[in-house]
Image (cartoon, rainbow, N blue to C red; front, top):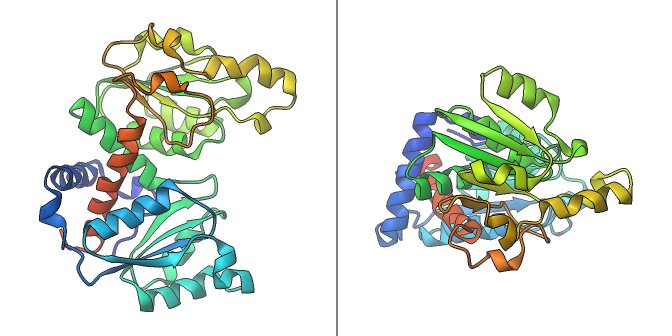
Length: 304
């Protein structure tokens, strides 16, 4: 039985295979409409979520399966003090596969060690968000015709953003990837990522403060929000926040075929005027998240 705790749980070949299955599902959904007949997905979400939980539910329902679960800890026996280990043992009796989100890092891993069914980490604190990374990789693969030979700009909160950390770890395994890391000094990537991942793997990267300085070179721009609460004082936040609002003016500096990705939700870091630009693919990205989660469910249930 296989679980998914991190995108690094899968080899590059396994990821490519998973993306081929997602492409097949996207191109011929009717072929897979009853693949999970009689199967049940449990969504155990100990903190609120919109996209991730509904995306998993949509994926299972589109495969012909059913869904049960809870949307926050207060509506589960966790409110009475039940442990994750006990919860997953019970859920294993009710469902065939589980997607779990938890505010504590490592909680889905603990659950997987006690579970009788496959467990998918749907986000654990600031640690991992593997199915978001699968969504990001599939979006790039689908819209660029593959992953590799790309200059990728990561913009915003690179210090605390779990989606950025997972994506860097996943992308360094592909050929000829160059990173441009766009953030204020206060929100640069952690030193372990810089030293143990990028430098250790001889991955070329540059660090810049202004988005405009990076734009002309990018094939992919991955936006995240700069969070006010990460700054020591309001003055620094106000000085920086305008650097990281993508608008039509900044887009004039970009390549015609650059793609703009965002894990969502956005606040104000991408102006709504950008939504109509063909390079803005973040809503397509969210839709593609359903197809890659369908593929993952089928793989973990050993159906396809």
